[in-house]
Image: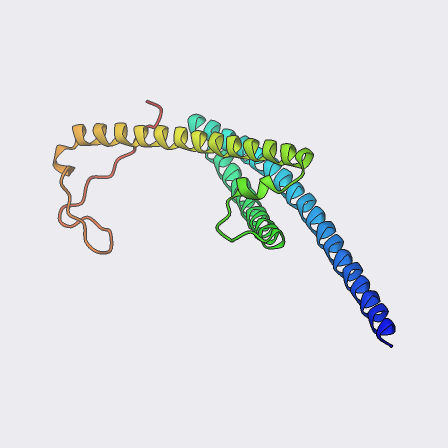
Length: 194
């Protein structure tokens, strides 16, 4: 009888071990699938950011040429691409959170820590994508800063010219509705081709 109990306990222990091993294998497969989806999302996001770079160039060209129709079109395409990038970023973040959870890492674990748990082949590919994403974001920021700088400089120049021509308009007081209080400035047309 005791031998039957021992054999029964050993069989149950083996079944439990097989079950645990199957669960671990299932988790490993789930992690591999998630890593693959994470990598694909990063690739998609990189493609979208490269599209944003092209549209930022188009916007910069339109501003320099003062082609307002081209600017409007570039702005619409930029908006659509921005929405897609944002959606992709949310998906990538969700995959990263899920990876942290499956790997048993705390939520505070950064990208580098999670990357350390990924196999070397995928790790190199994902690290390369991550670097390329960062470079694309920096290029977009640079292009955007160039456009801002040009527009700010142009506005400053125009304001200086208007102040020189109409010195009395320097210190206007504005009402809550945005209208100038007191004497209204004379109407004028400014030729933007300086």
